[in-house]
Amino acid sequence: MKAHVYKRDHINTDEIIPARYLNMDQEVDLAKHAMEDLDIDFIKNVELGDAIIAGRNFGCGSSREHAVWALRGAGIRAVIADSFARIFYRNCINNGFLAIECKGVSEKIKSGSEIKIDLKKGEILDLNTGNTYHFAPLPEFAQKILNAGGLLNLVKKKML
Amino acid sequence: MSQTITEKILAKHCGKDEVKPGELINAKLDLVMCHDVTTTPAIDMLREYDINAVFNPDKIVIMPDHFVPNKDIKSAEMVRKIRLWAKEMGIEAFYELGRHGVCHALLPEQGHVRPGMTIVGADSHTCTHGALGAFSTGIGSTDLAASLATGELWFKVPESILFIINGNLFKGVYAKDIILEIIRQIGVDGAMYKTMEFRGDIIDDLSIEARMTITNMAIEAGAKSGIIAADQKTVDYVRNRTDVAFEIIKSDKNAHYDKVIEIDVSHLEPMVAFPHLPSNGKAISSIETIPVDQAYIGSCTNGRIEDLRIAAEIMQGKHIAKGTRCIVIPATTEIWKQANKEGLLDIFMDAGATVSSPTCGACLGGHMGVIASGERCISTTNRNFVGRMGSPESEVYLASPATVAVSALAGVICDPRDQ
Ligand code: SF4
Image (tube, rainbow over all chains, first blue to last red; front, side, top):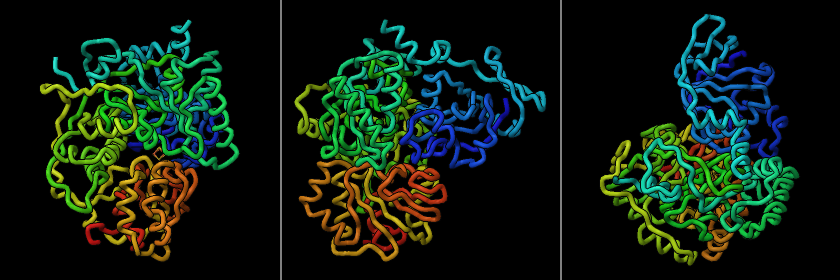
């Protein structure tokens, strides 16, 4: 997976998917405008299976889950950040979308680098430099939701 | 064990005597709030999972607000879908156009919020309702779908930070200035995942509406919720709106706080948060001359009747500066009617402002005053992120209704204390 690195803190959901597109809620429609107000070229450069790497408090601001869908729809498979804003983080988990907390990587990995994420080992491998970075495994409850394929699968199971 | 108000409310709603920060719980929800933008995806999810009933239609409130009156065909379709679904589910509390308003102003106004409740809403500023002594937090659409289906939701019990606000608040300085100062001090992730509990003489003195301005912006410091224990003012406010019973819960004396931050506001000046973060607050005396193209008075932060009274008092008999536009948006229908009765709308319009029907409007760059590239807006709203009110090349400055009103008259950002 290719890394799209933004050396910035507080990338907010208004930048990830601007409100002017919130009259739509389908992933394919939202994906066309992912990261538009932050990086107009993002959508041209992104490929299926890529990752975003950023600084602190990624996904702060509005609770719009559209931010997760826009990124996923654009092909992003994981976001790696120093920290995540709470609602965005919940939205990721609930969607079975990977949000990995790993401090300082946006300073170390270069944009465009090929990286590999090993969830079991809790490792990010930078294939360009051979460096590895460690992250704490996802919390157990998050793992449970991820394994179930999202929160609603769990809810449905419970309701049956 | 001693507990905070938040821990006590959460413990009660998961059937335990006590909970500890970091503990994962499933809490029963007393109220689930939906609006026009985040609800249609939840409805689609419920249908996809073949979930055809909600946990309790009486505990669900729907208030289309972001793009109402519907700004285009797509938003009209969204509201239509929600309206039909609400009917199918038997949800009575659907605030149709004509009774509508911005969700966080409308919910407490209509008596849906009471002390001690657990509330979730598919909107980040749902933390507002903590001003009435409830645990209230924002969620996304999947959480909303789960909440609608089961009436429960998983939470990690948050640590609490206690803010004790004391001193004397001088004329021209308001609740908005206090919260902008707090966010300036701790940063936009200063309370991440935590609860901000507010207390102190100043908080006691503030009206319920002003308290809501403070809890409204807890999310701008990354907090899960903001909370102020109920007092007699809260009881009176709630009693004027509903007969439903409630319980007042307070933090124990020796409750544990992650941090205690004391702030003396005696020297606090009116604050202006510069682009592009709510934490970029500056004291008004320290800023250079900044011309503004637009002044915006409204939103769930500062679109309530007290805010409009403050702005109208300043604008009475005066005129908006040439080259500056001013938009006033009463946050709810009731506020609109009250402002009209008191002659405030006339004052605004005589001053050259325009008054819109209640809506989130341009607060999130939806409609009703979106700004162009290179334009600058001073606003009573809560976010000044890049592109928040329109073009990604525009700028938003956050301030109190008084500061926005004097700035509208002057055409540059001004100090309301000079009035
Ligand atoms: S007024 Fe603004 S901040 Fe408040 S709910 Fe509406 S869009 Fe969100």
